[in-house]
Length: 126
Image (tube, rainbow, N blue to C red; front, side):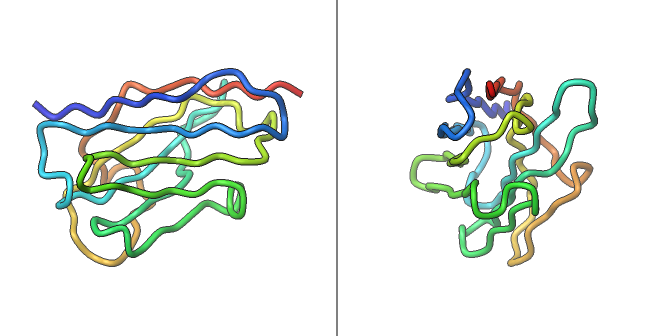
């Protein structure tokens, strides 16, 4: 069965950095667009960053643009989220997601992602 396993979350001070990883299994990773979403406490899940199947196209939400970078390694079946200059408002549970679509557009709608990880907590202290 398909599994997405996130890692790399934790507690960090404002201005610090974290790198999230999402290891995929049970699917042909190169056939899937990938994305990171997050759910802050008491709020709805929101799109953070996405990457197409080849890694040639990426898109980052305005709230993280210039601070976060999504990337993927198809040989390792892994997608990453490098998070720099973290702010307290970045505190959330971060989820990776997989969408079985090949193309150049980055998918930002959660409903178009078929598989989800269990999430990893990121807490940024002020």
